[in-house]
Image (cartoon, rainbow, N blue to C red):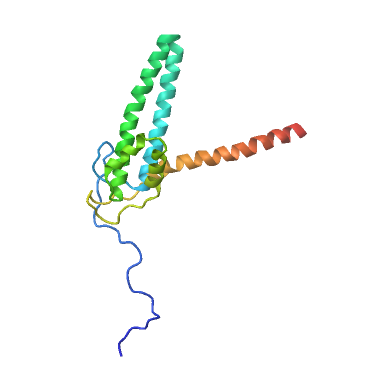
Length: 177
């Protein structure tokens, strides 16, 4: 009798197999795929760059321009900074949607209030397709730079929480002495 015991564990491969080849990362393209961590890291970097540019341009406008013309100029600067950021955000969303074999047209939900929050959560949670799909080969493994970019926002949150707890405690400690 060569029958296998019904109590034996399955013999199938459980661990995912690494793909043979990887796709290229194309930041300013609607083609290709983008993994979860890379998407989050690039989104954080884009947000930091937009806030930095808006702060610098706003500071320059406040220093050099005063009155009504300065306000109109500031609105123009916001549009100049926000329009490319929206386009880049849409392109990153399209590539992330391609990673789990969804149409890039879903990225238009970015401009719909509340639906954009749901889309962002889906993009962060949904795992990518193992291996190649209709949009190309899987993205390459994450580099140290991508991992550090993705860790910036959680690190800021942790530092903020620690500061919110430590500063009042320290102020109370100083007032007691």
